[in-house]
Image: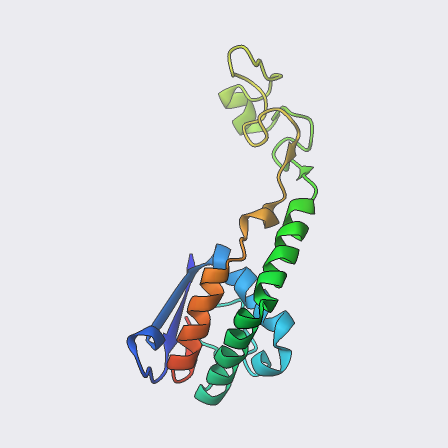
Length: 165
């Protein structure tokens, strides 16, 4: 699934369309909401693709604010903090085996995941956590990327307002 963001009245090709996977969009939207609450407030549904957006004046103002923060290094600082926070997220209990390392549900029994993992053969053990009982925090799948922010700032300055679809 992705977020397709369409310019309402694009002034250039850069303002016609912006696309992000959900993995890239959610950290971008969180950044915008956290950093520019006054400029993002009129768009209520940043995390859904139901057609909400900003008008031209607000979109352009947001694009200019982001461009200024990119130039000053504030966005790079945000990215560093984000990466530190992501790296510090603790592993979580595997939901498939409830932390035991073996799956005892119907799928686990059917495919042999209900026995302790045999490292020599690579068989057994929960297929979700490889028999460890813990998995990496799901939130680590959402990267924050400066290039993504830069592209969105350019889109915002040229889109004539937008709708998230």
